[in-house]
Image (spheres, rainbow over the protein chains, first blue to last red):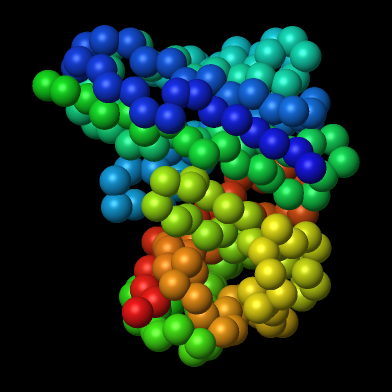
Length: 111
Length: 114
């Protein structure tokens, strides 16, 4: 079945440093979604990418979808303490009915 | 607009017992998804219901089952509870099946097996 892998599992950064998490799928995806889960909270939808090579920005967050639609990345510029949490990617394969979530990247920020 | 609501917030059971978890989707959402989030294992997909029918099932044993009611609310039932079933169970809802809509999550039910 479809597998979605995320790296790294944990990332420690100093406040103000940049952060990137990568998502790779074993199959071509029709779209990819990104979610953020704050400690003690539930996942919250951030964005969806659909087109090959698509790049979207939300303030300090930049999301990319690979040309082959099998990988994606989330980059945060100049991290802040409010960015702490776990970032999940979730992909839907061309023939699949549901989303497959990656295991997430835990972002830990040291002030 | 009310979000996805789940009950109970916490549930404590012993091995072999049965647990029932409930979820009310956002008004107008017809799809309900169930996930298990055990420590360090991310979100494991359990079940997907839409329009009252089971649409997809994750790689879990048959003792995990559920249903969706005519008002689109849903129940997750776990029979013959085992220690490894201890986890946060998250419910999510979305607007349209197959339309790649975002999933909106509830706060979850924390199930603890003693």
